[in-house]
Amino acid sequence: MATYLIDLSPDDMKRRLPEALRVYVDAMRYPRGTEEQRAALWLEHTRRAGWKCVAAVEVAESGTGAGAESGTDAGTESGADLIDAPLLGIAYGYSGAPDQWWQQQVISGLQRVGASPGRIAELMASYFELTELHIEPRAQGKGLGEALTRRLLAGRDESHVLLSTPEINGEANRAWQLYRRLGFTDVIRGYHFAGDPRPFAILGRPLPL
Ligand SMILES: CC(C)(COP(=O)(O)OP(=O)(O)OC[C@H]1O[C@@H](n2cnc3c(N)ncnc32)[C@H](O)[C@@H]1OP(=O)(O)O)[C@@H](O)C(=O)NCCC(=O)NCCS
Image (cartoon, rainbow, N blue to C red; front, side):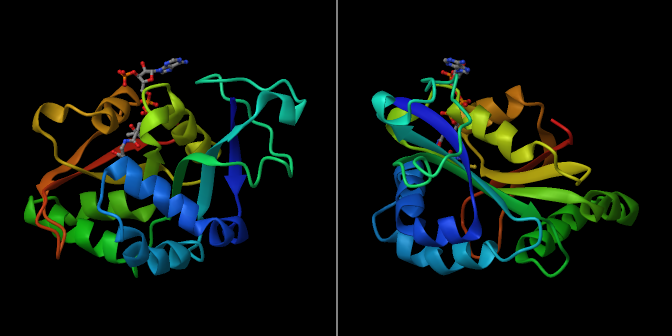
């Protein structure tokens, strides 16, 4: 099998939503059924300004005829034959904006940790929210997460990228390793989003990556 990276349009995401959500639930090891709770939100996100989605897909090597590459040397073909190939990973995000719940939550968190209004305005003025990044468990640890992140963040207009990730003891998981390797630094630690008992970190870094 060979792995390719492709861009998904809002229509592609709509069509492939059940499969994309399955990758998310498997990667996060959430219970089955979580998909249904997220479906409407993921679709609503496709309509936000600056939304971009990238995916890793798997194809039989003989099927592409396009010099398919494997593993982390993922190819970047985007032909019609790839658009419906099975998903191995998915990542998307959009431009941050004041009417978004996530931005409002991050502003409360920044106020709580004593950030100045100037610092908050500077952080919120122009950022890309890296909203979701998930790789099928069997395909993790081969560099696909980094490849998707780089593709997603390439050519953005925003001055920086922000994301949230669950706090893990010792930052000992692949998400933390990836974000640190890519130069993400702490914006807020141990933050509790409304309605979620888990502590999260908000991380960010300047763009371009
Ligand atoms: C977090 C996640 C997206 C990272 O994706 P990934 O593909 O597993 O991770 P990376 O891109 O960082 O690659 C990881 C490994 O590939 C290795 N790698 C990098 N380039 C490589 C290459 N060219 N060839 C082979 N291996 C390579 C790295 O050394 C790294 O090794 P390590 O993790 O054992 O230290 C993925 O693990 C995942 O979906 N996890 C569960 C869901 C999750 O936590 N999502 C984020 C929530 S905020």
